[in-house]
Length: 358
Image (cartoon, rainbow, N blue to C red; front, side, top):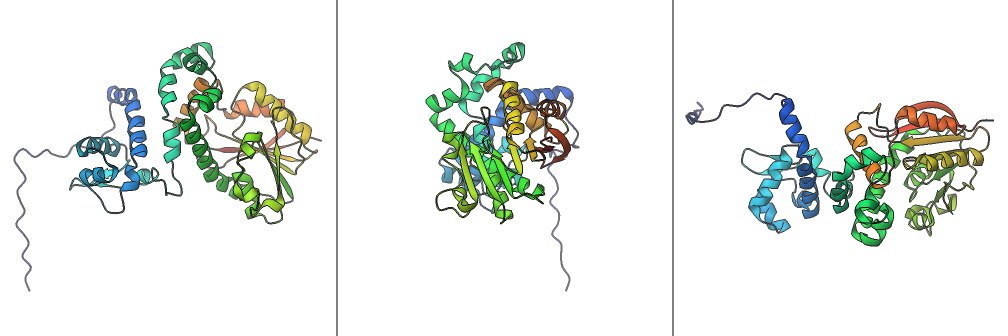
């Protein structure tokens, strides 16, 4: 049987020829950079509207999505078109929109969701402080109180309750996702007790206790923080029998003895807080106790665009800083800890293996 192929439709006379994909020229790169606020705002808008949650596995038109999220179709198409330029959603030849790996991260039900973190990094107060970055660079201190009339955390909890809730959810999301990486990384041979210092809600500790059934652990953080500890660690939780919860400020004292101390992402405020925390660990630990310090670095990492941006945001809101490898090694050594191996936990975290000296 002969198959007859359809006659190809001739291309329109004025059809545009495909353009070769070439890197943008410096002038266009700079234009794109200075419109970075548009990208951040577009991500925030999509997250707040729930566009990623509305889009299923089947591509949909902007009109169909607009009916679900209750917005106007034409502006939604413009939003989706802008996001698609950066790989957040993709537009099909038929004019429909489909998910990409990045757009799925804006779904609430994705196990690696970055929705809350995307909202946190684009909260209203961020738009107020970023224009004052030159002042922060000039003075070397936070501009938050100058802009809002009070310190960052005071403002957050007194004047921006919704933002505080988003902050808590974002930090929880980040901690849960990195906790599994930390648990996978750490070799706990010979370790019977671990203390998570400044450990927030204890997601790292819970992951370690679940992986090592004979391990006992202590979670230490401020009273208001440990009051919201991971459900596995308190009340009738599955790990409560092997968990001790200590309310306190690690900058003042660490009344905990353990074979292993974990300090994760709490050495990014001021230098005095960092020095006091590290010295308190040395004072608390027995000779030979392990101390694992886990931090974002602004060098020696594949995620420098992210970590350097977070570094600048820390300068703006609390006067803090992310560390370079050298700056963190210096502070660890000055505190009296002996530094061993430095290993990558994931694309944005490094672990510094240390020991309390004899």
